[in-house]
Image 1 (tube, rainbow, N blue to C red):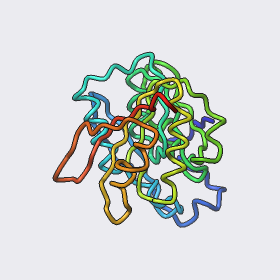
Image 2 (image 1 turned 30 degrees about the horizontal axis):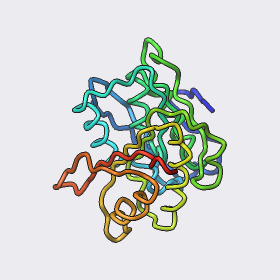
Image 3 (image 1 turned 180 degrees about the horizontal axis):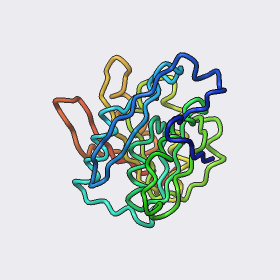
Image 4 (image 1 turned 45 degrees about the vertical axis):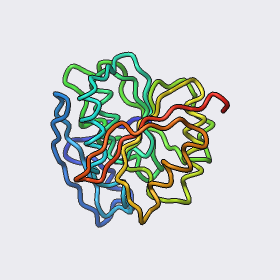
Length: 223
């Protein structure tokens, strides 16, 4: 799914979903790229509307690790504004951005707003709906990287997220998850209990002052 929209009106005016909403555009300079990210508030997007610090920290971590993006197939879960996946696409990755259907117009607007003047170095990012544990089997398992930023905060979704990750990683994809470690949402239990049941999990980086951890995971051989 893709949608190139008018710069002055990035969301469909005839959709009642966007009544009584407002958008805010912020500019982020990451890994030598300048991203203009539209955040739509008041459209029942909830946590999908803003750019979260965990997403920015994941981008910066990849820059510090000098990750090579060209030629890599990447899928982002719970993309929200799409800042992580769009950055990867601008750096040469073949990216699929996923989230719940309600979020897709915001994602599509941000993809269009961040197309490089010379065109996408690989392919334009694909935007698709994905509900964990429900329709993940529609997606292939041939990814190189599976990414997620601040998607671990609802304990009832943790088994569904693990099932989805296991399917996406059948062909040895590496998972990178950046999360604020919210004890009130049992975020630590996801990385200490749920995910290790099917994945090897390694803490790669921690920002103490932000309480953000970045983990790398790979599917266990017996899965």
